[in-house]
Image 1 (cartoon, one colour):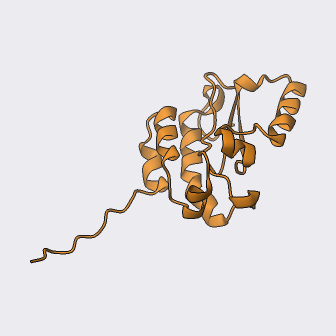
Image 2 (tube, one colour; image 1 turned 135 degrees about the vertical axis):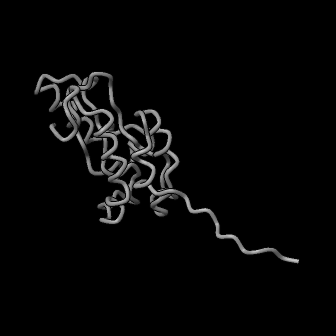
Amino acid sequence: MTGPVLPLPVAPTPLELAPTMGSWSDLVETVTGCVACTELATGRTHVVPGVYPDGADVLLIGEAPGAQEDASGVPFVGKAGQVLDALLGAAGLARDRVAVANVLKCRPPGNRKPKRSEMATCTPWLDRQIELDHPAGGPPGNM
């Protein structure tokens, strides 16, 4: 005897989950488990949610993690990170006072350019990061 066929549960999307994240650590924990972009989720080593030092003065946003970022789980540690560090130094900004995130939280295979659909899927995470930890305590959107 068989019972009724029940639909499989559907995992919430970043668009549904991101606004519910009450803190940076909540968001990091949730984004780390994201599998919304199957190709990115299956090919990644680490999710790269970003870093937000307490009292950050500036938020810098990149496109997507590269190979070294995927290996470490930390944004801007490869060649782009070296360039960033040099530019920050020239501007008189300490790296530990700069928040850094990417639009995509997972490395695209072969460092290819992110697809529009991937950027659209990941954007709610970034939007929530900006809302949670906007630099220098100013209102969101006034960076």
